[in-house]
Length: 265
Ligand SMILES: [Zn+2]
Image 1 (cartoon, rainbow, N blue to C red):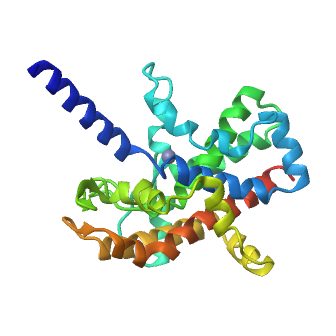
Image 2 (cartoon, helix red, strand yellow):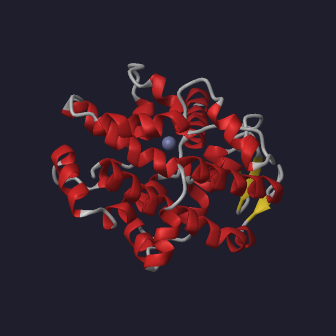
């Protein structure tokens, strides 16, 4: 009996650890992919079909998280591709300097790296499949503000707090809890937020990759300021961040479409 209980506790702990390491939960990534799918150019759709066949973008949106469970270490090198950790409350200028100074493979280097593989006429179909799955996922991660958070708390993973009395951490609140709280399927979610007009879409899709990183980082600063350790979060937190959460998901989807439309010009 004792053995059994410790096994169960072990499984529960492993579950929370693996959860906290994930990005936008499965729903968040699928919302981003589904919105992007709706804004692809004809040509991009055609080129993507050569890689994915009939499988839509959302089918692969979470695969780069799923492979973290691969026990062969084949994908171990990709663990660090999902985020950057940088100092908070700095000017845009300093932030971009810090971003460009990252000296290992990260979310910042791997987005353009995946674009390069997709543009490369000599890349194999298998390499393009993997690059496309990562690109879909990483543009999503870029818009989860705590994937552009701070090193000292591991993007909010070390900031313990409660969500409706359940012990969790700040990173998980933004990966899963806020998204799941809406109780929309990912297609309902896409329907509900993909309502921007032409000018707004154009505005969202403008800017550089560095601008997009800075926007997420600025929102992360605000989140850190408003969510100290031991916070007891519930309805009010959803009320405060509802619009900003949905804006991040919409921005992610529209910008993923823009990136793919540019890659497959
Ligand atoms: Zn991720």
